Image (cartoon, rainbow, N blue to C red; front, side, top):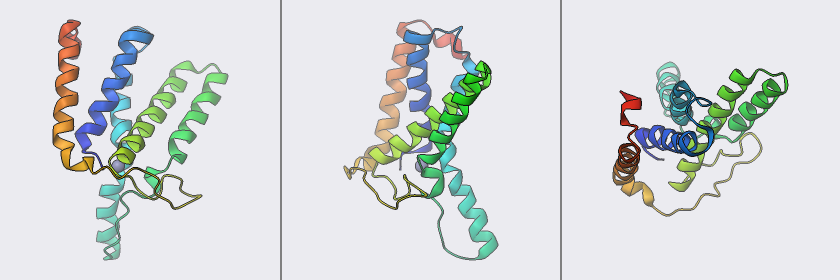
Amino acid sequence: MALAVTHVILTIVILDIFRHYVWGRHKFPRYLLVIGGVAGLFPDIDIPLTWIYKFLTGTGISLHGTFTHSLFFPLLFLIIGAVLHYNKNIKWAGICYIIAFGWFSHLTLDCLYGGYKDFLWPLFVVNFCPQWGIGQHATSIDAIILVAWLVHEEIHNKIKDYM
Ligand SMILES: [Zn+2]
């Protein structure tokens, strides 16, 4: 699995690049970046859920990398967003799309780091992700993403957007 910071920062960076080059600041308010960043980390809610589960049951079973790491959830939010969009509820449709994207980016990143077996929950249990062993470089990857983004923001004189 990728580190928590990677999940948040990479999702925000990708969304911010689209905000900068495609959608524009006014069509893509900053709160959507925050929602995207939180959604980018949200599937790891199964870590505190594991603590609670272990506390309540006294078992050693870990829920991490199970159902919250399924493509089912980003697909669900995509469909809800499409329905809201169809009903002209553009604001909430956008929020659902961003949650779907953040969730999907989490799963993609975890997959690149080696993955889990429940991406296709509840249909199949299979890990089709590449085993490159890049997880051992996790903190370096964090640093590279953060520095590249800071340089990009500084070049475009947009650091003040975050202050
Ligand atoms: Zn994860």
